[in-house]
Image (cartoon, rainbow, N blue to C red; front, top):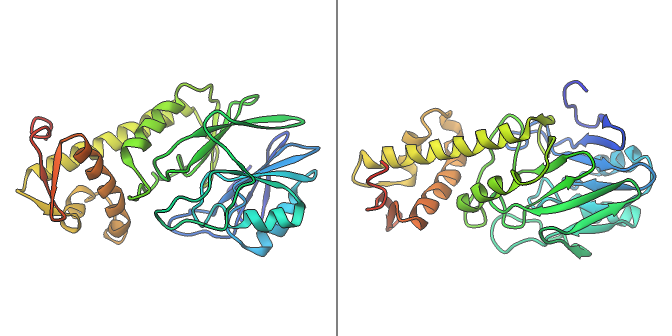
Length: 283
């Protein structure tokens, strides 16, 4: 398959193609992966940003008519092309509508709102929707059961951990959603950013362990001071991350703190944080 290159159609297996949008960047890696599933009739997962050349390329890459367009969530690098591609092809839109909070794509208006356990079927595939809130409250992963391939959107990325940004992002829900995936028969992970990931259970266990280690570090560093604001605390908790990324890291740090606050381990007083009674035994 080689290195991901925007505009290049990668045939990952019979009936599965990947086309990466030309929106590479710090938050998107090589770009947003759009997946085309099926042969005689095609489903597209995450058509990506509203870039005309990418929409043209999706139409050209499809081996048959595009009938279904599914979005994992409504961040602006995933769903804005959906309505435009639907206008071109007559396909129906599937997913969850945009939530109130966060920078969401309000143009995505699904014809069919999916909930956990719903399925979308074509002549040679069946996709099961798995609700995985955390990165976004309306986030869905899609499991192609016949192959064991899970299309993870931004719930799991290749080469990086995802940002969990409150108020729509929620660290408690994110960890619960990761655990939830372990009950499904997974063979490979197909993320919206980066290459296919083998050994799904090992990937999921690593992500859970990484987040819990970061959480322990939050309590440890907060326990070394009486109190701290978010801007001060991020420099200590994310001292292994380049300072240029600290503004982004602050969003995930807030998500960690809100989870710990929910569990009684930390207290928030006027946007300053301190270890709570339940957290003193863990720090």
